[in-house]
Image 1: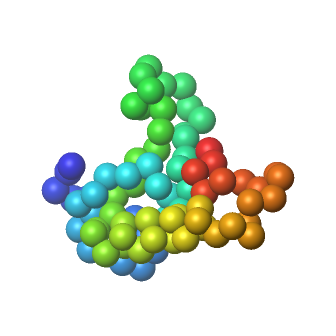
Image 2: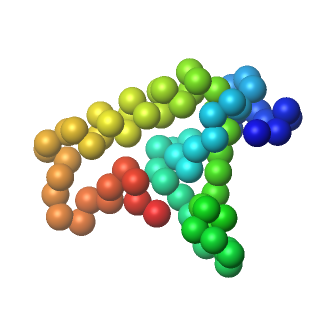
Length: 79
């Protein structure tokens, strides 16, 4: 991680010590650009521990919600 990495969560501004493919909206994302390896294909975000924990909590609460599993529902990990 670079020394200049800042948390990508809107309005945070803390040091982004965790590198993640989880977007600030709680979705895994790909760049859509040509990539030379699987690892390069996905956009990476930086988060402080607090913001990363909050995002993960939101993802898991959506995954575990039984009334939100209808056909056509986009998974929290959708690309």
